[in-house]
Length: 233
Image (cartoon, rainbow, N blue to C red; front, side, top):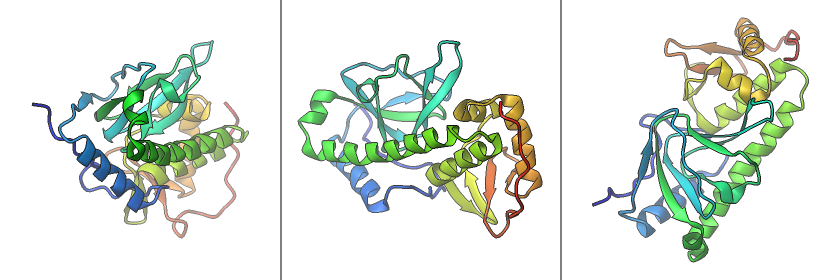
């Protein structure tokens, strides 16, 4: 018998979400009531998630990165699907479009026909697609900034808002990100991102804890000095 559906955040985390909390709570309740006992599909960190044209996934637990590839082979981050967010080929015209588990994830799969037949499910998916749209516009705006350090700051602030939780002196990004992950996200190089991270640490804008999580300092803690320029890359 398939396990009961439980939509939840990782234990001990209180994410700072751009969407309002009541909407997220209603969405989880709707899924649990309407699709109780539905199959849940698990993928481990780094595993690709199969995508079909007439299906969509909803994240129950974990984080999924959504990528495309430039003709030269460079990977580009185009979105991050967080708990309660939908994703799939139905929502994009990009080719290729890749979904990769950024952490261990639990996903629920729906057909487009199922969504169209449920007004409640359709309304909830719309609500969380709005979050994805806001996220995508933020990603588009940051890559137009010529200064890598500013692009990196805006990316970290987006992650802080979406998957951060408060710690003394700042907000921890609840995901271990490699320098290459960040480079792909802001259309830069790993070497340049490493240098920019070092400058932001020197300024007190961020620090990295013993578990290699990035912590963005509170405004009162971070230095207000003008950041030094980092070459584009």
